[in-house]
Amino acid sequence: MGNGLSSHDVATLVANPFFNALPSDISKMNCSYASIGMALASITTVTQAIKHRHRIVKALCQDFPMYILTEHRSAVVTIFGLPMSLLWDCALKFRASYIQCFKCAPHLHDARVRTIQEQVQNRKDKNAPLCTARPGWASVSLSYRNYKKKWNAIEMPLYDILDIDTHNLIVRVEPFVSIGQLTHTLNPMGYTLPVVPEMDDLTVGGLINGTGIESSSHKYGLFHEIITELELLLGDGRVITATADNEYSDLFHAVPWSYGTLALLLSAKLKLIPCKAYVKLTYTPHHSKESYIEHMRQLSGEYGVQNGKEIPMFVESLAFSLDTAVVMSGDFVDEKDVPRGTANRLSLWWKPWFYTHVRGMLRDAKAGKNTKRTVEYIPLRDYYHRHTQSLFWEMELMIPIGNNVIFRWLLGWLMPPKVSFLKISQTEMTRQLVERTHVAQDFLVPTRKMSDFLDLCDREFDRIYPLWLCLHSHGPMPGSLLKPPVKPGRDGNEMYIDVGVYGLPRCVHEKREEEFDMKKSMRNVLNYLVTIDGFQMLYADVFSTRQEFEEMFDHNGYRELRKKYSADRAFKEVYDKMSVIL
Image 1: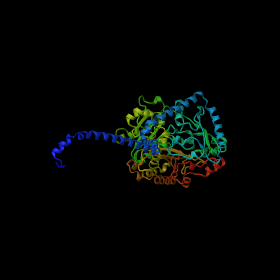
Image 2 (image 1 turned 180 degrees about the vertical axis):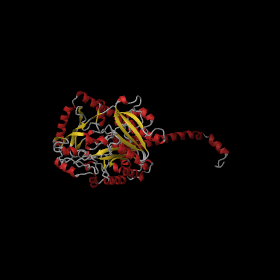
Image 3 (image 1 turned 45 degrees about the vertical axis):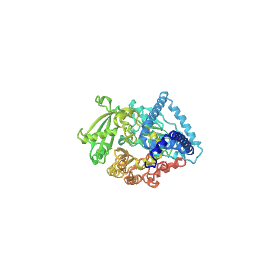
Image 4 (image 1 turned 120 degrees about the vertical axis):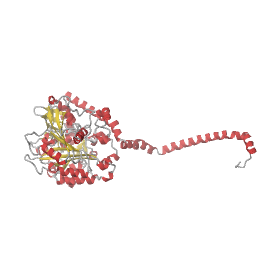
């Protein structure tokens, strides 16, 4: 054989007892060695685990949850955010019902005001500015405001509807009453606010100190136009009542857009108007920019009443491209005037999101499947909160399958998640990504410049659509940050349009994120906005320097009032409270 042994030698070896026993002994030895090896490996593993225990704990307790929150945020929002939002809603509704049943809110209000007043008067650090203690994550704005951690945060548990005076058409409310609370309470009584911003969670205080707009604003102006009285706590601890014609009238006109930098709001009286159970809504598709702009301006009453037609109660438009849009106009109607079986109850959980419903009409019109106009009858509260279910169209980014018919039938009743939970679930990575790529802005533009501004938005934001287009009558506000209209009509007002840009640029959708420069685009838009007498809504991120900010907003009368009412020693200026990105 090739190894040099003869056949006889091999046979002799095989017959040897020692040779026959060798494989078994080797096997036993191998098992022993394997056991020793496994023991040593286990000891090594335990030793390394002990040595790196802090790193392992961090990976399990921080890195893994961060990975889930970043890479699988949609699942987190669906599994946790939706049920938590529902429970929070139920808790608030139960509390509101309890307060209303026992009619104890007015008495509690006075006691709460005294407590808040004592907090302001007895604060330890007189040099630190005042602000409310409501956490930043609880606001509806997607921006982050971190200043409250360093300032004197005043607890203000003011969440109640205090009085409804149907004779004088006035409702008195505390600042943290939500629009959802008001519509739930007022609409069944046959009353409503003249201006009802479309999101349930928006608060009266935020809408007064900031601003609010709705599809009735072409008739009634911005939200502050419906205020008749403000109860305010000044920086020196005094509580005063301001109206349009008393000694504090200058403060009354200046509080809107002041963002809590003149006084703390304790309560407000708002106008009411009678309403009916339904809205008759007419949808008109357009396939040219000039066509839908002109249609909106005609409906707004900017040109006056034409051909004896009354100005509709509601006007808005959704633009799905630069040249395509659906203009919607509506009026109150009684239930008896609604043809049987034709009501479109938008709030039903299985209904498609409103903007997709509207987009379908545009597609049908283009395909010649329907007439030029479509008429629907929508329950009033369903109309007011038509964009709530999908947060306009932002839910498509949070829960991509949210408008799927199966998802709607199974989980649609849980929608939408609270914006506060969406903010809480963001990681630093997703926050930075949103800051770089996600646009959430409202720009107030004179209708005379609307066409040029839409061209600019299409170019700078790389075709973000849909756009929300909502008219409003802009009037003078002496002492406030808002500049008066440059080209007013006979009534002293000028018609403006709110251009709402919410979403991701086309290049980001197509995974070309590096092609979009948020800061550059925003600064280009804001610089142009100043030249056409426009404004940026300040709930969103601000990309202006302080000097540029003061070019857009008038600070002269505002600063005089801050001195007059001791606000300059108790509150920071508006710019200091903004989410500034430079």
